[in-house]
Length: 80
Image (cartoon, rainbow, N blue to C red; front, side, top):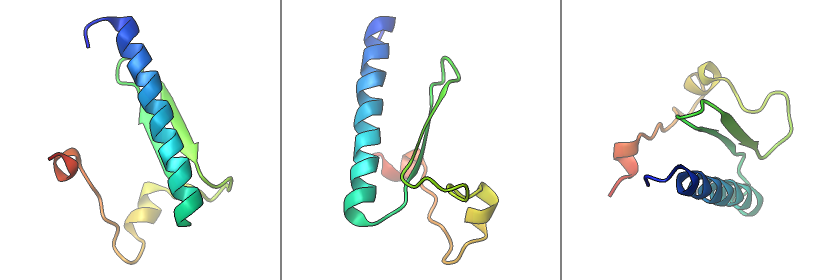
């Protein structure tokens, strides 16, 4: 998308949709969600946590030490 205003509008819509999906997943599937979105152009972060605890989300080190071993997905794992 070449027009900055259009790009910003699309980001806003998709971010909102993603956060709503994360909220629904947490609510209906009994899972905890920690979502981080970083705008590459501005460097601004947006976060969503499905639980309001100081211990959530866990640190990257805590996740890597957890059992069973975590599944880490990258873009090539989900692209068709």
